[in-house]
Image 1 (spheres, rainbow, N blue to C red):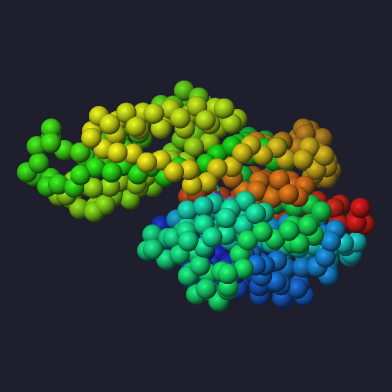
Image 2: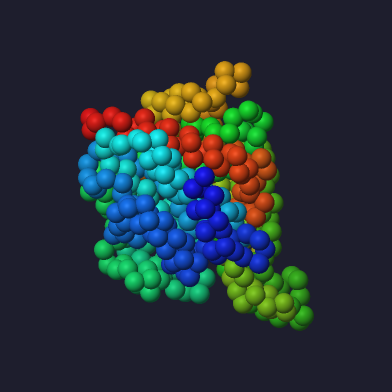
Length: 409
Ligand code: HGY
Ligand code: MN
Ligand code: MN
């Protein structure tokens, strides 16, 4: 299957020492991955364009209104898995091959997209490319986002040969899409317990990221009495434990996995500790209860240790309920190839954010998930069996054939 050749070409790009992937937007591995996509698309006679925000689009047919769009992302979290993002992109290209092999001729254009900075791994705001296109983030704020070395989005985008001056809402692009379908590796084990290689998304939990700055007082680790300290590490420690307890109490998710300690010296009590809270819950009120609970306990711990606290919401995403019609239409299409005995195609909620979630406020949107037997993601252990990869291609080809057969409404 053409998928395997596509996958073999992509696999070596951006491999990290840990066996996972390091593909940061606008950095070298990302440039290589974008070339992989562009070369594969050109080889298929697709018309490849870069939109004002740096997202890539490969068109089968003349770009224009009434299009069906699909795609995902190629950037990764640090030491991420192979499938999160790239599976959706490779399956889309392979689905075109499969449709052509069936002699299928689309009644309307198909656009295969690669969104930039979906993980927010380098510049901190997830789904940046789709948020920009959807007008959901101020372009000036995006341009001034910086990575760990202080390089801004604008500088990095310019170094990649693109003009950051034009980033922002792209109503013409989104207006040309009648529907957007994203295929993605499942980031959980719901399908692993079933006879289904492919499931359909029902919703995305509300979630967000909050930066917590604990400002203390730098001092000597050896000469400063414990009572005389304003050590920001202490309220951070309390906050990490509070987030865990609140998430358990509310059956939510709360994680502090990234922290910057200044000056980060073994024998220097820090002046500042910045940490990022990633919180998610099945509904908005539960998410709010968890985040407010963390904020309160962090503020109390900061006060108790003579430390000040500032909390900044860096990105928030409301509950996404995918269009029920589209969801059910995809389930019917995917189900047509599944034996009766397997039961109905699973409709899956998820705590993972996706560009499809951002677009769902602007374009009718749906998602397909492909079985991940480990259920693990954002880790080198993420996995999809080769057979299920092909099942993903076939399911996406069937869905696209159904959507592309209908003349523009
Ligand atoms: O964090 C997420 O949910 C996604 O991987 N960006
Ligand atoms: Mn991810
Ligand atoms: Mn993803």
